[in-house]
Length: 288
Image (cartoon, rainbow, N blue to C red):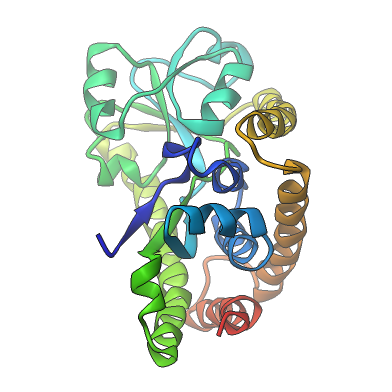
């Protein structure tokens, strides 16, 4: 295989540092995609070393829309509503829902429909665009939007030998396509989530708002989870995982400022162009 998409937390033993990078979720996909691409490509030597060991070159990361709670019969708006529920979640998200009192279940996305239908799952932690993309409308009757975090993947991973065989001009073309891919993916995600939110009532799905207590509980669990992830990463062999944490935090602060400077959403075409320009100038021109 010459290229594909790399889901880091499917390979935690082989790629422990990229897995740590991927598991540290953010709450704005526009910020997270850019920040984690920047760290992966420019500020994570351990990531690059592990990729080289497996003959992989990652060109960009994307981030899903913020995950929400999608459930069949239950209604979750307060912390106590989550207690004991069987929630499909993976990676760091599984640890997070466990800290909230739910029972994390590691189920492939392809089995979520059946799991919700048969009661094997009470809830799944996914971005709302999966209501349409994964065909979940019939089995998801309630949604609660929460700052549960985003899910990061290596959107384009290339065989290192193939990458090394390319000319400088060909590499530059891939870098420019990386700019367009991040922007295009995130723009499409924003539109898909908005469409799902609007379509919910007509599909028999109720969009619920969390109580302030549930939002506080999630944020508290996330802070605990951040420390736990460092311990897990260290156990997998990541040296000084705090360095990765600090690099992500620094890049996140930087990209939060960039996104705020571009302006409020929904973005116009000119604003998306400004986001592309920032990706190009801050990340990809430093790779050529």
